[in-house]
Length: 424
Image 1 (cartoon, rainbow, N blue to C red):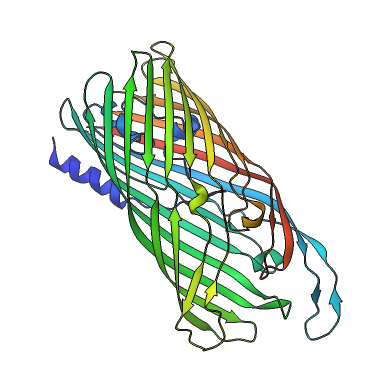
Image 2: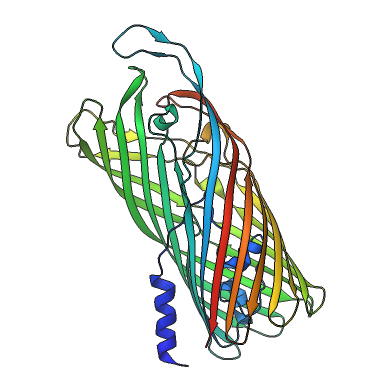
């Protein structure tokens, strides 16, 4: 093996820029081929992105391979909020309840994936990937009543996954890997005082955290045409230390230390691959995500720069429910160089009425996608387009929200992706 190529591969996987954002929370867009097949891509041949989709399938890679993928996601959506009755500032005059209509500001994001796989011998493989598993971004007008819940929310995330895979025989292969997970969180909102019934200032919470997890996978081939696989990814608990700032309406700035604990959920992937012939194959995939770990987003505040002004805790109940994502993907090779792909995915809604918010105003999701691929002996280029139809979501307001309830609707996300792979 060329040691320079190994160093280059590791650097590409670890140091590539990782920026992610989309409508939703879980990211499944790890390569153009994966986007094209709706995420049902657990059994691809000679694809370094198997590190992300199914680590046990890196045993299908021959030799040494590097891959980079860039996926553009552009979310859109509207909402209606039922605004609470309130007092006009400085008077005893009541402003009656009324509906507010608005939309999210288009705030596109990128999901970037970098992968390196090397076949050590006929039985062993090493792979490493850097890709986002969880990320989101949402933004609303700062002068809106929705802003009392959130006017800017961003979670940047990346997982680095060094992986070892072993092929036992023609039927069995398995893999185990570590996961180094990074999250960067930024939350901005207008603070609505429930007694004064008015905005008293804007707040910003910003911090980052690293945590460890692990994953394991196994494949079993019944024959040359049928194969099944399973992937488990562990839950990851982040202890987030952050900076809190408040800009009161009266002027000035108040600072404090913020601390919170967020647990990213564990998940199971179960997949089935069927080859109709040498040119056409079909994949089915079901993903179980234990979103119930996201039961609350509680932030404690300490060491305020102005004593007795800030609360000691800013708590927000979530109580999400566990959910399933189902995907089907079709791949057809027209020749040794050209192929087409198509996919569909259905993602259940996991957000309850009392746990929804403007951070992630997402209902069930249906994703339709197509793609194409060109490859020769050394290089592979793939492109994909997708349309995510995001379902409606109704959710309740809380004491520090200026609205009683809200309805998110007409939400969708445009997706475009490109991947490039090089064999050495």
